[in-house]
Amino acid sequence: MSLKAFHIFFIGLSVLTAAGFGIWLIGQYSAAGRTIFLISAIISFIVASGLVVYGIRFLKKLKHVSFL
Image 1: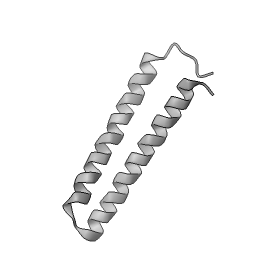
Image 2: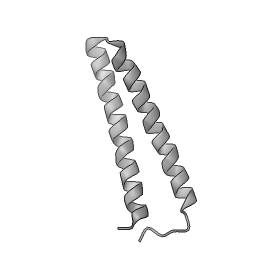
Image 3: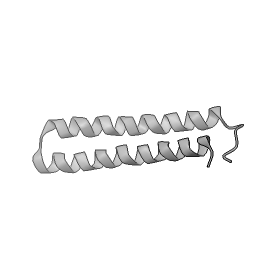
């Protein structure tokens, strides 16, 4: 596995983790009603979106480098 492939894998895993954490925080907000959970969920979704944008830019920048 090349460094590029590992990087893409790690970015994807990070996106899933950030989005999953955001979903969990929404559940906590629904249960407890504390505003900090909602704010944290929004931040987590922003981070997940930023990682998606970063991943797309990374792929465009290194499109000439093979995955092997």
